[in-house]
Image (tube, rainbow, N blue to C red; front, side, top):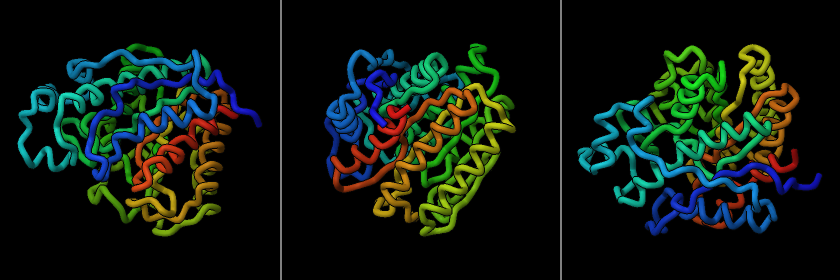
Length: 302
């Protein structure tokens, strides 16, 4: 298959900024991903820049006091340790802009059938606290925004990061029009896992064939049962066998097959699908960018 250079892509330059290159969270991966996708010939007039966000806009899903303290750097030390990122004005700018990027991606997917965000997937952020490198939850924000506006009737969040989407599950627990599904490594962070609508905990060291079978069976079932207007697809690449924080044994080719399968099943069902990149950890920063680029390459084949 050839790659479609007209795939809608969403990216903002403030996603990457000057940041400790030895930190476990590789802030440069967003800029490196942009460059990688550009080298593939997939960036042109199809690139959309989201509007700059504000912390006030996130109050439809987050506690206003938490947003105020986060924005003004008045969270206590333990709250910042739980997040795991050093506060800065640059970090705040990207933190409030990325959810707008995921929302823009979802709206493009509703219009075109498929769209990809070169960021997003901050699924460990909760209503009134951040965790696991996540300060605010772009998936919950996007789902709630689309439901509130009447742009959709129901949303399926299909989370394939190696870590359970605890924040998304907790924040949307009482939102009947958002269905949360997390397929993750059971014996991994977070150690307290609030229930999603559907959680599938995988055993350590699971390999490609079994993994892909679980994903195909689950997504096919949910597309029929939930019949969502849109799937928000969290395409974490920390399932890779050499990832620094993953405990599965999924090959590079397995991730390619997974992403292709998700897009294929959604489009077969005539369901719009918007992807975000979420987790991936690697001391080789360029290799990490290429790993995150898999989902965009697979989307471009459609």
